Length: 203
Image (cartoon, rainbow, N blue to C red; front, top):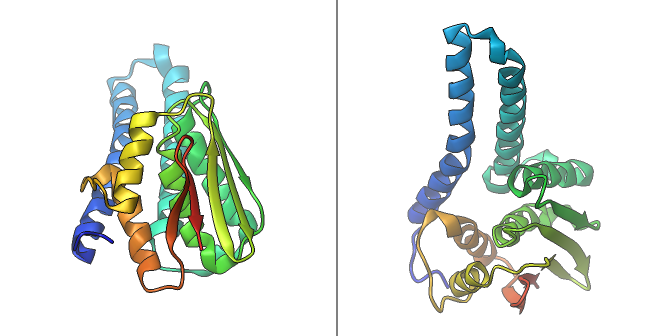
């Protein structure tokens, strides 16, 4: 249950989370533009690289947010596009030293949005990288993580929001409340399958 958190409150949490995830990188773009305006060409190569990287990150995150939180569209039926969108998003949060690798088998397209939000929830606990495995078996969707360094505090806070034992109504956990809202009127339930390295089961 959502402890009576309203749809409006969930929307506000999601918007805050999205803005937070884009604001930092957009700030880097602004700084690069300011350097260009100053006309200091000694750092032109670095500025160009910064702009290229930053724009790629913003683009990847916006595309992911569009599929995960936007109105359903035909792109959710394209499994290759869903996989690429999720992979590109994960590449923006893991970093070169803490990569997050996605292993995703074919799932019903009707569950694509649910899978994307679940991937985001699990990825938030992989602060030192790892693997996220997504598969669909016997009518159940599994989203499981593996990491050499589980973030116990983040995992327990996430579980507290999922099972309602200690919900934290802040933007970091917005995807959890959104996922629970998505599942509320469906025949699916969100279950914690593993606690040490977060694993979700949707059945």
